[in-house]
Length: 349
Image (cartoon, rainbow, N blue to C red; front, side, top):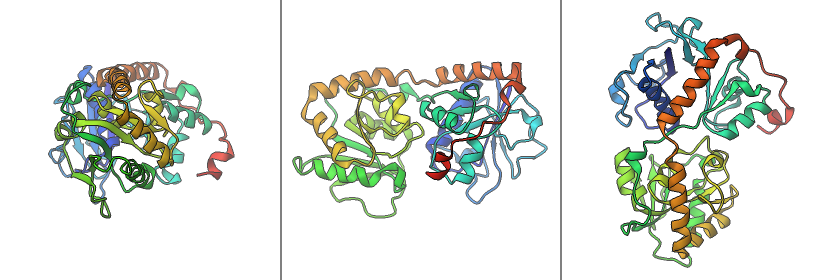
């Protein structure tokens, strides 16, 4: 089949963008003709695919940099992962990667589109049903990770980093909660070795934490994930949480909030420790518990590694392909409008 993905790509790394590219690569590996549309135009959009240095595209993927989604150079096809593309490009599919991360004027039309929705996490299908979408329009297809790129032995003696955490200023990412939790752990462990990573923060980070700016994927694996005993995910909400799964497959034990996306891989005291969002004290207690109990930490890390290793792009592509084949067999069956949505979703936005 001929499949087209569309997003106004930037040269900056983004987990959601990386996942979109991963779905495209996976379908290309399965022999489909895949097109990536980098558009429409906006100030930070790339001018050439080579500007995206942080992702290794499958060589068969065809790239298009366009200013408008109705550009006549775009090919006719079967599936269009962007309902705003002309219908000749393919039957529409929305991609849902989060909830309450963007303004309602963007998210509401996506959840209520009269077409299938590719949901990166199970909890997003629950949100879709609450918005009135029928279950058959909600495809749960978790993204994959490059397992071989990140994997490392759990019991490695070379884990000098006590705690690692992705740090973002975005309130929903819970960065302030994470720092408060780690400061609490330091009360009894003043020598706690903390490594934070991410983009440029808007303000200073604590002097007791190391900050790694702009690491590429290989450096992130080698310098952070494989060297960390514990990985913290402090988010209030996560679409999926790729960095947590990458850290798990690299052998770090996960302490995470129950943020939505984490429900696909964080089973409390089986594959991770799970605490409520916006609860720095409980987050701190979870980190301290694993640092104080090596056997428990290794048990969770091994189980987490085994589960995380099942999130492969080949598995994701196979699952997505099955949905697409069924969709193309009878497109109108999956293109009816949603039912009325319960008002509580509007009121609590």
